Length: 501
Ligand SMILES: Nc1ncnc2c1ncn2[C@@H]1O[C@H](COP(=O)(O)OP(=O)(O)OP(=O)(O)O)[C@@H](O)[C@H]1O
Ligand SMILES: [Mg+2]
Image (cartoon, rainbow, N blue to C red):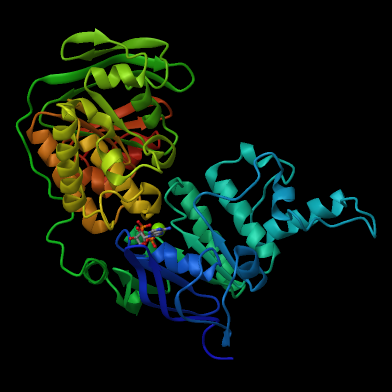
């Protein structure tokens, strides 16, 4: 057997109007973490769907331990020792942990059709033990956190003797603590000789967890490097094909009048006594650990959740929005964190989705509107570098990151005077992030007040004028751009006090 457990050579995959993978290459050693990076739409997920049998390839060779194979279905791939962990998990919410791990392969009592429950639970515990996870195997999956579900997925992969495990953006929905747990787990999988393919847009993670990294651009193979030798700048250059002058193109504007003020906003058991204001000319960051209540505050302002107390002042008027429709009427927009479920109509086109939130601005007779709509959508495709064969493409067919860009476009194109962005750059590649920050600058220049919820501290420090930090449902503190450091934010976010300098 050669050096590699997997070799993918000259893989080609076409979709109507798109060459998604154009002579893609990848090889994997046993016991290594091989990172796969590239801009949104570069072909990473497609290449992995070919490996995991979810998509057939048009051309190319796939060798598993030197033997040519072509996985025909996810089930077939699994039999060949390949498991892919998707971001949308494939677990059955009503079954418990053990049932999910051994679904369809439950141990039976002798020759009877009856499940040997004792053995099922023991086996499940043993598998979880192999990766150092302690979990009640009788708990229904519906009650688990995203991270716990991910662990069940990994246990399931191990239970079918996977030799290759693919993780497509596993970290996007994890808290920092959970990410540490995932990395520990990955280390233990490596020791067992499993080869991992790890897709992520966060380059810091690659430095931390990866052994080698392969870069794709426009469906093509750019190169493979040892992570040790590849610094951030070089990787970015390989990914976007040029140097990025600055990752955070912050522009400072004069702080204008107050747009919105929260006074003692409270939702019992979720957040309490939240007061802050948003002004024209500034981007305010709202950060803290995942679960601190940031998203919930934004949802309450937007009328998506009720509140128990407190008020919101908008341009001097007091109001509590009872519904998102009311919020939008008052000029408040919310880009939700959970884009797939709340932001997009997947079967509609890029054009229709991008202009969905502001149809009024386009309504001037049917013909004018169409033309304007096309122009607006076209501009966004260009400025955000949305990879699509055209504005009529159904959003369902775009890559994950490009779908998110469409949702962003939708909110960037509104008359909203207050915009709440919840994790706006999650899953977005480094190059496109810069464009999103530029568009935010433009909004602020035009007088929009922006609240940016983000867990990415570099982005918060790089783009915000003021930073609010939440801890367990309360505001723990506020820092100006000049005061803020990563350490000070973390101290507030974890309930400590900021050290004075
Ligand atoms: N089912 C499909 N039909 C048509 N085009 C598709 C389909 N699936 C993917 N594509 C296109 O193939 C290209 C590669 O998409 P892919 O999802 O592999 O990108 P990616 O590198 O995973 O990007 P991201 O970082 O945004 O997840 C994109 O242009 C995408 O629009
Ligand atoms: Mg993808």
